[in-house]
Amino acid sequence: MLVSVLTGTPALADPRPNHAGQPTEWVEVFSEDGTIKQVEVPQRAQPRTAFAAPPPADVVALQQTGPPHQRYDLVFVGDGYTSSQLGAFRAHVAEKWAFLRTVEPFRTYGNSFNVWMVDVVSPQSGVDNDPAPGVSRDTALGMGFWCANIEHLLCVNESAARAYAANAPQADQIIALGNSTKYGGAGGGVATASSGNAGSSWIAVHELGHSMAGLADEYDYPNGRYAGGEPYETNVSIYPAATQRSYRLKWYRYLGQPTPDGGVIGTYEGARYHRYGLYRPSENSLMRSLGRPFNTLGLNAMISAIRAKTG
Image 1: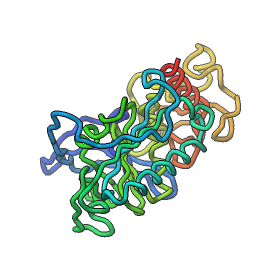
Image 2 (image 1 turned 180 degrees about the horizontal axis):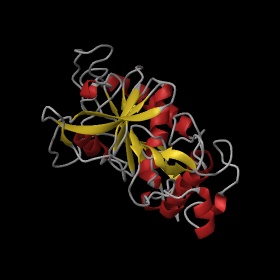
Image 3 (image 1 turned 90 degrees about the vertical axis):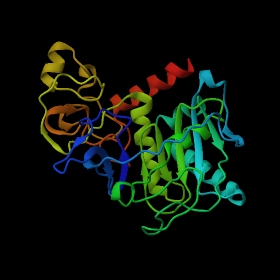
Image 4 (image 1 turned 120 degrees about the vertical axis):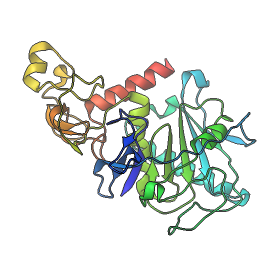
């Protein structure tokens, strides 16, 4: 199972002590079959490294289609690549971007993005705890598996990743690639993925749904009934179809229309970490399971985010 840190989406709860008095946090768990759920784990200490200026690193444009203030800028940084492996890093970035271009809206709006590659040089090749716990490597970004004692959670020193990414003209989303073929990744302000594992590519698409369009997760684990107010995200609601239609709420105008992820737009109970009391627009979109298209609501939100940046 693949896990992503829940930093780009609404938290289920603030970090709090568990029964042993230890602070905890919630993380997203992605299984290899594409299903996603939330689990509570001990809160992880975040390394804090001060950088007075971006560490020196070359920046190469994989794709540059316009000025940064008129484009959505993706910045890839790599970890566990030695100076002789920078060619492999660039090839891995090209593979990840090529995959993104197969998924809407990136297929249609790919030219609205600048894609930057920052050549981060590590003393040693690979990442920590790969292929097994206890394996340690000296790398620039400190990436490693078994974060929070979860095998496929691939963590990164976010301070270091952001510092290197600052060499690029602009960074709207940073993706850190760990030099590994092991299945794994993480999400948030700095998304991570295994560079040599094709399955990890979907994590970036899912996380861009959060960071670009502010989309909520549409899966329903681990809570029961929701008792709060109407969520702010466009793709979840407390109102069933009849109420939406009567009062022209949320996605009422799309009800009954086909959706790219299959079926029709409706109100399907179970969303945003609750099994009851919250509705999602479609049966099974990318914000519910990996390997799926965005539904109509998600796709429209993504397109709006791209157009707002590109003019």
